[in-house]
Picture 1 (cartoon, one colour):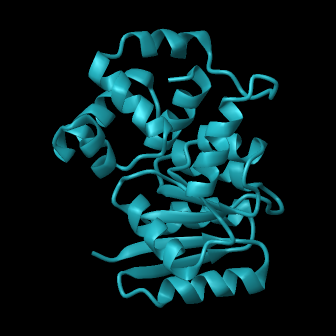
Picture 2 (cartoon, helix red, strand yellow):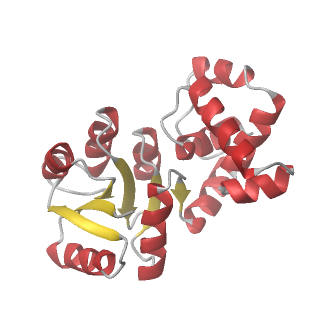
Picture 3 (spheres, one colour):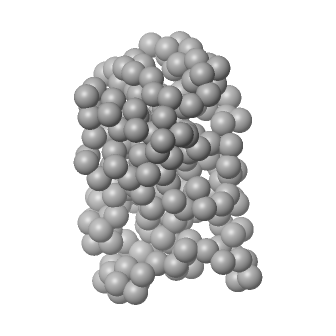
Length: 217
């Protein structure tokens, strides 16, 4: 199956490099290129790609706002690509519904695999970002966005197994890794992830990972 991608990046040289890398993969097609957030949303509406590779800092409409529109309209999954490894951009993009977060210093193989991972429906946070997120949540002095009371209440409705899976998501584990950790079939893990996302009214497993950190699960 060919993965159709729209690349949204305001720096033309960087965008050209990203396109070149993605086109080197036989299963990825670059369906369109955008130089700002508004164009990214427009192309997502017109082309209905499988995924938008979205830069955060762009003119006219920033990547977080563009991500929110693309996800809200169900146009495509969004993989956020940025130089910022931990700040409001991370939380903003993930809360907007991004399915993945990857740093721009990732090499070509990591970028291609990230696109494939998100296209398979598995969320992705760069390992370096996952480690920083966990460290951030472990530091009580650091101010961070808090989950609303109604979300905390929804978490209380999770089964013990769903809560365990949520905790594993918070550690950035893949479905396969969760299956090994909790000694269950990978298909069962997928079922638990789907159910807990529905109960928590979340768009992606990556949002669930952030929520797990916010609640200390």
